[in-house]
Each structure stands twice: as structure tokens, then as C-alpha cells.
Image (cartoon, rainbow, N blue to C red):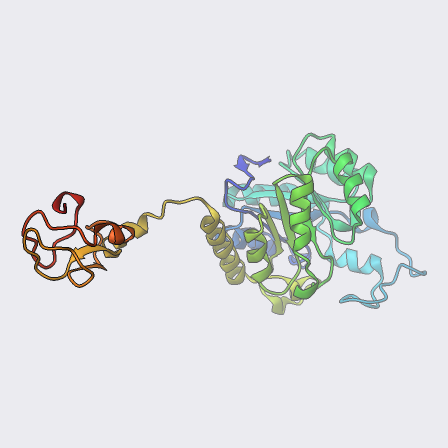
Length: 337
């Protein structure tokens, strides 16, 4: 997968998505600051959510339209999404600001109107949120653009994941637990491995835990994409603030995941080269006269490493010295009979 010229695979460090979500608090200038913060923190891209309240729900307070549990308990869906929306009119400005900042911007889509809006802005990729994974007509519509497609799998059954994958024309799947916040003990990172084994090597994690440890662990398990919420400050107290990272924390996550990725790469460990001198080898540890027998008293395995390998000790013991050998001489096959 390639997004805006950035190759995504295990051959490259994880593609890190800063999820802005509702952390702009309905303020365009804050949204601009989130873009700058994402760039500063080292994110590969910043992602917004492209919906307006009336495209995602209706204003109703009947059964099912008021949240019964979780961090937004008691709120009407309509009121929550009105608070959290990123107005469609912002997107040209957001994309322009991201280009100025030198960071890729794209968005989650929630219906055909959001896809159409973003197509007009040459959005480089689309995301399908966990809550929309069962909306196969939406997935099909986004897939038809030919743009890279990423789908989060939170709450989905294996059958639903399979349907979304087939409909999305081989999208990249992100393992996700749609808890806000998600608990580490519920994260089930083994499922990331299952996704990788079943759907190919390019998989990722959309994480809602409170720290940076789970993305680091996911990177060690092969995650090629990491998505995490970014806020300017949790004290802003937006709808998503309590499970978002502040810029300095996000930067620490980026650096740690890239370090873990680097640690997974093949290497001949050139930093070891200066230490090779200190390996063991066979040395003369007492003066030996020509014709004298080599014994465990006058030949030993010691540091440094310029003599015969220690495994040859049984082979040389009992042989005789061809020349006088002084203490500290590295043993070589040429000087023994």
C-alpha cells in the first residue's frame, strides 16, 4: 500500500496516523494546531472524520438514540455527533494547512457524501471506522475510488471482517478494540497476528488504550500502521480527550515504535566489531621450549581472540611445540607438531 508517496509495509517503519477526531473542539484554529502538532510529533499522517451530524444520525431521543453506557452515557447521539463533527466546509482548509505543514491528511468516511467531498479534494486514502464495518454499500463506494482503503475491525465478527475485506477489495485491516478507553487486558493483540496470517502481512492497530505500550507491542508483532488519537491537551476535555495522547506523548510513541521496528530488521551488528577482539582463543600461558609438549598448564583458552578457536584445545593438547613459544603467544596450527 502506498499513501501519498509513503510506502506501507514491513520493510518500512510503521505508518503512524494521528487521529484528530473531535479534539479540535469545533474550532478551526485548534484543528490547524493539531496538524502542526502531528507533524512535530513525527506522525506520518493526520486523519479527520468526515461527517456532519445529519449525515450520521437524526435528531431523536427515542429508544436507541440516547447512549446508555460508556464515556458519553446519557447523551443523545445527535448531540454527541454535533459536538464532535468536523464541518465539511473545513476540509479544503484542513488539507491546505496540512500541505503547508508537510504532512499527509486524509479522513474517515461515513456515507457517500463524505466520499464525494473528499474525492473533490484528491484525498489520498480513506478510512472506514469500526462502527461502519457492516456498512458494505459504503465500503464498496469508497473502494470504487481506487484509493487505498483502511478498515478498523472493532466489535466485528470474523464473518463481518471477511465481508468487509472482500467488499473493500483487499483493504488494510486494523485490529481495534472499540472501548473508550480500551483496557490493555482486553486488547487481544493475538488477533493482530491472526489478521496478518489470514489477510496478508500489511495489518495494523487502531488503539484506544491510555498509554503508548500497546502500539509498541503491536509493532513487535508486525503492525505496519498505528492509529492513535492526538489532542493538544487532555485538559481541553473534549469528547475524545481522555483517551488521546498529548503531543509529547505521541512523539514518544512514534520514536518507540520506530525503534522497535528497527530492532526487528536483519543486521550484521557492526557495533559488535570492536568487541570481537575480546573473544576467547588459545594462547600460550607459560614459556614452552621447542619439542616440549602442550598441556593444560601451558596452553589455555583466554581473551583476546587471535589464537586458535577454543574448540581445538583437545586437538592440540599432547602435541609438541615446533619452536620456542613465549608466554602470551597466540597459538596457531603452524607452530605445533
